[in-house]
Length: 324
Image (cartoon, rainbow, N blue to C red; front, side):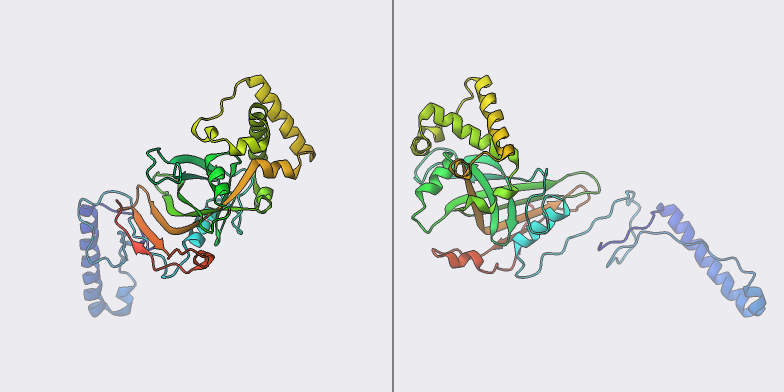
């Protein structure tokens, strides 16, 4: 830690300790000159002086310094550092993912995402905002999944023949704003692409697989085949209601039992779940807490192009931003 904190004494006690220590040193020096070595052995030793010590400090704290709190400024990341690597390192330290960036079993590791309501820039609809579970975080991007037939999945399906990805913004929060701890906010902009489900299926919680497949089954009952649900546009605008709760519960339970017994086909899982990879071209991290003078905030950018080469491009030096 850049600052070292020792037990703090009030200013009157510090002044008294300094005076006592100085007078004893002067007495020791005087007796030393008169009495020699035998006298020096009889001298009382001054008690240790306990004061706060700070890096690069030029003066002692003023009398108003009466709180046991240590402030420090975090140094900015190294030039050319990969923010995705830093993001993963922080998640590892909070036991959200393993060393390889895959979600730990039982970890509540989520991401808020926002996409345009439609490809029409003149649309007045608000962005499509939702929370998804992070399944893997690597230098390639952030992997998650959505249900087939959802707005994001439908937009990705329409862009299959296009090299351009779907614009997306993300927000991730972790930590607690309590004394002695810190919190982080990661947010960014980038493009997302459809990836094969088999890449993240082993890391997905069973409850996610069950609920998505069961929801697709219920939608198929109401709207026909899976293809009909994919091509429907009303599902994006209107959320699907539960309807008969007893029947919905029965379908979910049956789907869960099929998954646990290995009877749920991979083909149906592929038809129900869309795996997505978010590749950022801008990332931002804000970190701090009650013990911070101010929130530390950094921003990374890299150029984006029409080909896939930009996905592996190096990041520019991070910018240090104001807290707000």
